[in-house]
Image (cartoon, rainbow, N blue to C red; front, side, top):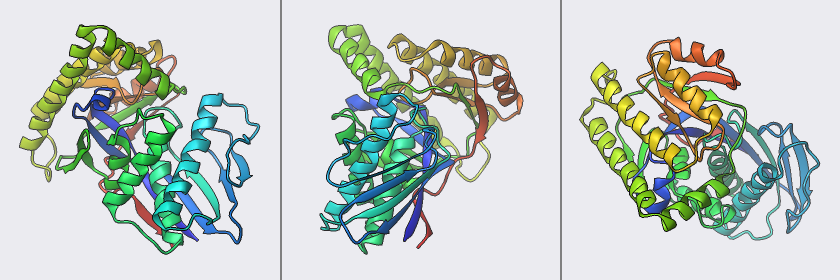
Length: 338
């Protein structure tokens, strides 16, 4: 039996544009998904998910995940949860050359499902790592990140980027542009997250941006402008001392870029009333910048604020179900018990 955890993430900049080869900078946060894998004597897979925002479920299957547990959650979220776990199992079997391996898998998560905090990536990364380790074939981090991306790519019908899975595997802040993935040195940034209790449909939102981009030249320009924001923000981070507290000037400049990034994402139609309400509540409370994080349509915002004011304000903002300070997770995937 092996237990592995992997962190969620927030996007400092670049969601949606990263799908088209523009750079993005996601940052791992200390909200983790934990997967325990134990070998079975048959080729069945038994999955127990105690939370995942799904009220919990248990399902056992062999060769297909057509059977769905009867839980009171939106079907797209349930299908995604099952799909990601199954894709992780298939990647682990392939990596270990063990096509008939069966597993008992337990999934626990601090990360709301579908909220834009990388819950699926964290589950896939931790799942593949736990399953390959229990098979005696642990992967190096690069191969693990690649296989986790392949799993998400399959489930998301070819619309995934490497950003979430690479960030969850490596930890810290990373830069992703197409297939080019690198770790960044960055100071610890004062993230505050607000969650509206909902979740957007990543596939539909990505598809809607694609349709706009293919139809209107100015929408394509908007996607490119998000890439320009990322490059500017990356230059600011490169000049900062990763071993010191970030300066007020750096936080202010990053905040400006974050605010512009949110405006461009709103123009692409991926924000929502609840996300915009939380963004403005954070800004009015004194946050240097605030934006949606992830696919949008509902879920989470991320703000930069050293003080407690933004978190307090969000707590009393209509439509905000939870708010918390999110520390940078300098360590990515890790073994918790083996």
